[in-house]
Image (cartoon, rainbow, N blue to C red; front, side):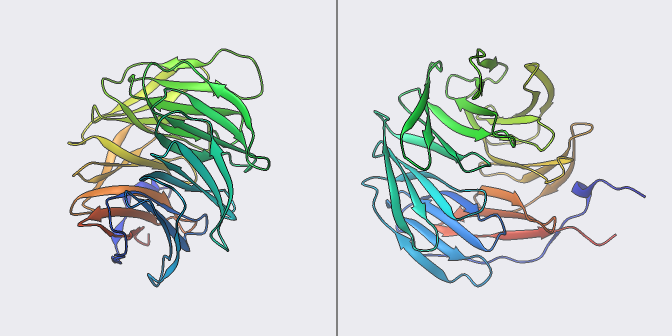
Length: 306
């Protein structure tokens, strides 16, 4: 008998990592969930063995707080965005900087790889998103249109579209292979802090208005408005089959939503402070990372056996 995979989660353990000397702004897992990447206001990034907690590398180069970080789809590369107005591309195995991407005029708040690892998108306080060629480090296209800072970004799984979320309360969906006008998705009543695509092409956006909205981006239509968080929504992740969405909010719980109904089917008390990242592992486990007193806390939740 089919059961929604979001219904069965059991907390299995917590690991603590403590080396940063500033607030941790972002935590992301490699595609196989073996490496944890963190970035901080101390201007550094750290690479960790996610299982043992061993610090693999301290990564320096930025001249200001590092606001966002991300792995490429195969985790061969990772990228960072900084208050120093630059983004950087790094080689994971050596932690060496391969490219410095200078094009923004103010703090860079978000960075994302395309699933095929050919492109990188950045966005920041200058209200622009910039599309970069990963191999050359050259600017491919400047995406202008937001009326305030761009805080979040993500590519669709086919690398044909990119979504950007802004402090102007909107989400924009840009076509990368045509001159088609971008679609503007309106409805949030606060800054759009995170966006993510599902395997089926649905788009979710989380906001400072404490809601998550699920869209059909090709039609520009709102499918669900998910309410229940008590703080602003920091991070989201679709399950690998697209049947469930996990969302985490500032000083609040992690919620699991059924994407066939829009109903919340599970509430997980994950962290003392806030979850900074979440992802679904290949096994189906939900991994969340949070921060309290400058400690990163990867916390796995595994589905109960049926």
